[in-house]
Amino acid sequence: MKKLVLSLMAVAAFGFTANAQEKEKPAFGFQENNVFLEGSFQISDMKVKPENEPDYKATVFQVSPKVGYMLNDKFAVGASLGFGKIGTDNEIFGGIFDEIDSDYIKTTYAGAFARYYFLELGKRFKTYTEVGIGYSQGIVNADLGEFKATGIKAGVDLGFNYFVTENLAIAFNLGNVFSYSNYNLKFEGEKQGTVSTTNANLNVFDNFFDNAKFGLVYKF
Image 1 (cartoon, rainbow, N blue to C red):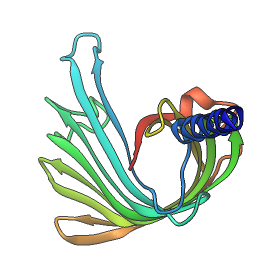
Image 2: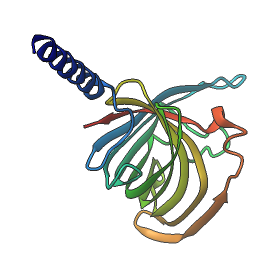
Image 3: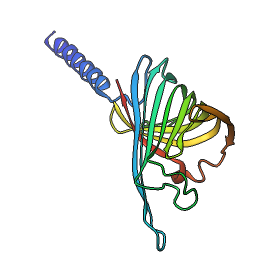
């Protein structure tokens, strides 16, 4: 009887240990009802030094946050924002358009997206495709007046997440496979025309480092 009791205790202890190890095992990726925050940040300086003319300088700043909700372990929906600014200390276009003495160019974006995780490359790499649409605006503040472009922007992206920990991942956006935009152009509030662009890029993998944008993802 004593040996039987000890054997049962040993089996129970082994089962408890195995169950605890299973629960402690990191769960890389997303599950239903997960919420995630994703964002990228970019800042760069540009300087042009023409011969016998003043230098031209510009600082580019861009931030793009997103929040998403997992409908299941594959599909997510969410909202995205974007803000960018190019600040200059003199004529941004140099001698090409001397009449435009610009202080800054601003861009803003607000939209929605749907994402599908379709491929896992190991336990940590999660590859996705994403469809997004939203409202975009660009403003040029110049001596001649205010130039504004407003309209819609839509696109299909490819990307993947690499999970460093259970909750933190690095985001790689490989670029637009397809994009469409339609903008109304205004000068000092008066409409000047429209501009529409359509672009299909099937070579995002060939020029990965030219197109890729890097960011961070935090899963709740």
